[in-house]
Length: 408
Image (cartoon, rainbow, N blue to C red):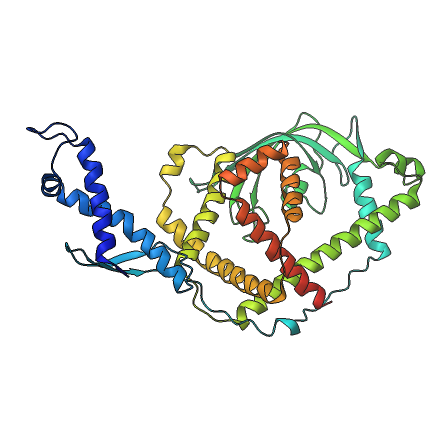
């Protein structure tokens, strides 16, 4: 970029005049310091301020003239500043890649069967029935299969100082239940209220709870009571108790509709994921580093906000290895940026736009979820610069919806 010598001289003269008004130099009254003295005494300051004023302005003008859209801060080099000559500099910056999208019209992900079978409805109904169960105490009888032991317990890990002990004040354990650890059923069967049982449990490596998987624990269990589960009858009265249903058939119909909606939502989500995967495979282009870094920042910001909301203190945050965290986020951020650029380009080609009404509906939903006035939410998101992100997200969702409907 070259800035004409007369523009440089004019900007410098304006700065000299401003300095003359405020400079305090011994031997001269304020506002009466000669221009040549100002130029001598403040030569470096004048040059620095002139560069700071002119370089950004002429950089913007030049990029606009060439139809370039910088997406990163320019790195200025080869700065040439000499009195009476044009100011010259080079600026290096990233721009969006040229993306030619193709093949997306032919994407046809498989559509799974989303019909709901009668047995699925009955299973869901029985689960609801199980949630409404009551427990009655059993007197003068030891625990047997099908009973529920009302217990408290402590568990101490063996030979593992990194694992914390577990302690539960009160919990119900189904003796012989499919979800009950077998060692608990085996060692509590036959126990009576008031008894204490001590036993070891060796958890398999693939145990569902990762904190316990592959570990050995010694448990001390106190039996407080023996209880039996009482399930309510499946009849019209049950349907009225669990909700506003005229009869049991109405409850079954609602369950069927809910299961169908859940299956449909899952199928649509999976289909869209497959569309995204195919789009990424079909399009190769250089992804700007600046956008990757911005996406890493967003991912880390969301993650840290979640940790703070869960109670993490600033002291813990200071101890985190952010270099490692950033590196761990890079692959996901790269994919997200690539998908975003592809969807942006498809939206351009297909003329998919986001209306103000679309944004207003999203803001209204945010306001309801956060229990805040709509205008307060709008002001906060505008201040945080999040409105553009919301608009972009809506556009991407509309584009994915468009691709999904085409493949239907």
